[in-house]
Length: 324
Image (cartoon, rainbow, N blue to C red; front, side, top):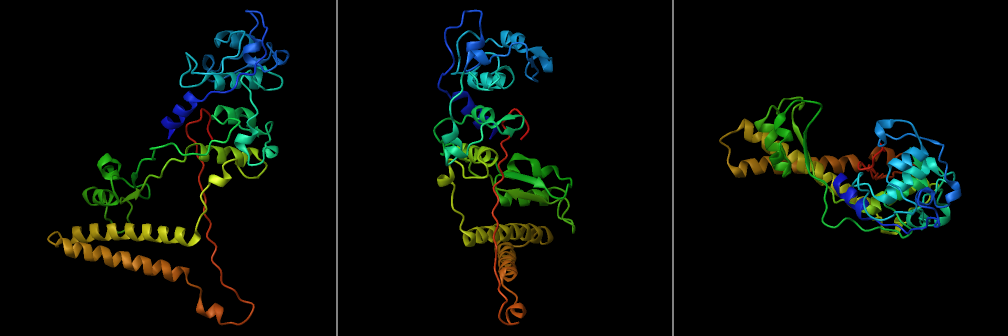
């Protein structure tokens, strides 16, 4: 996901709004939306700037290849894949009193469903919502489509902090069966399952819908993101069925691997039968766990049974330069 998002940042362009009319040596027009907001004597420190050395904004700007005009398109020549827009926005946080860079644009409608809910000056560590949203490539128009053709990779990893090098091999990540085979060929199969391999299928990358929803959660006052209409509605019953079947498939794969290990001369049909038995048992167990208790329901009026299915979406954007 990191590489795909960096690509998005590298191709994002913004509207140029900076002041004009600065003399060639006056770089305030290339940094701030309003040149009078420029604070050349403010101390500017950045991990990307001389290894964290504290400089004045004037010195940092002079070393940052700014000019007397706003540069808001393309990639910075020394900081790729960081764009000029993102570079300018970062400097504006410290070197412009309004924190609005020469590349600033009103992106409220690209973040929140109702642009009035946007809180541009709210702290969104380590900067403001306005700066962070712009840095992550959001614009004045909502961008809610997925990155076409991208997908998170499958994973096959050892359970319970165990030790099984076979799990991490690329061949083991191809399918649940390949991951289960890694358990058998490696050091797995113990009664406590400590060294068994666990498979997880990669999900489709959600692109800017995911990014927008993440920013909105921090910058829209708890209200809906601009991509709310694009967020898929969750069918609780379908979600539970999918989860149950995934769990049953994992149980089946493990049962087949265990049966094959215990019975090296078993036929394919016998191995498949062991897997089907485990699959059916897991489905039955899940159905039983979801069913209401008969005793509780028979105690009379006033007692109700309900099932609440909570679905959480983890918004970890790992490509940003700061830790999220």
